[in-house]
Amino acid sequence: MTIQRMDNVGIVVDDLEAAVAFFTELGMELEGEARLEGTCADRTVGLDGVRSAIAMMRTPDGHGKLELTKFHAPAAITAGPLNPPPNTLGLHRVMFAVDDIDDTITRLRRHGAELLGEVARYENTYRLCTLRGPSGIIVALAERIG
Image 1 (cartoon, rainbow, N blue to C red):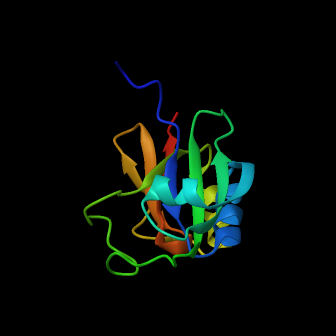
Image 2 (cartoon, helix red, strand yellow):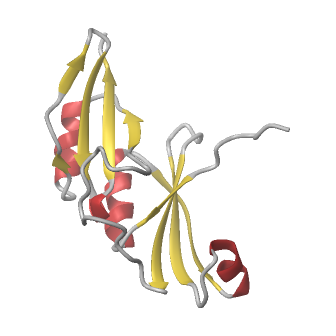
């Protein structure tokens, strides 16, 4: 048996509206929003008394999805430093291919994004950078050259 596909990546955020605005500015589309609570939610995540709100974001091609989750109960906890460096163990980052990296950075900065380094060139194939977005989410951008 094999998997059918990777369905989505889940990210817990402290400000759902800010995260939706950030990823919308990046070019993702809001697929839907929902409130999750009750026995099924408790059993699925292994916590008691879950009350959460989610926003499902999808890439324009429909293949990539992010599930942004705001926990109202139990409250979200910080697993380590508030803004861990890129070499922290665990989920590292989410990378997106973009048409214009400079324009994308400019637009995301209006939503609080900060460059972690600078825009760098990888050989003659890509311009790359890494940003920190809402709730400390690390987002990498790649623009194909040529």
